[in-house]
Length: 87
Image (cartoon, rainbow, N blue to C red; front, top):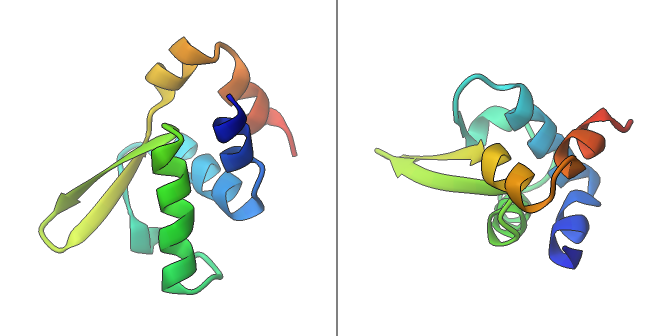
């Protein structure tokens, strides 16, 4: 739980999670328009992936991310919706 809360506590990572929550399909890492360097965005995606919040897969030369909402809800009921509802 501590790792998940730490992952969701960063504004950049929270923005990624919000974008994925509203997306209808997995998003390529370049589609987020993050205002950080490529190495920093790679770090943020890794933190989210290692905490179990997102999953990633490669298709061609692109890496796609998707929110693991169902698994997340099963492990931590109501937490994701509470985080997404907060502003």
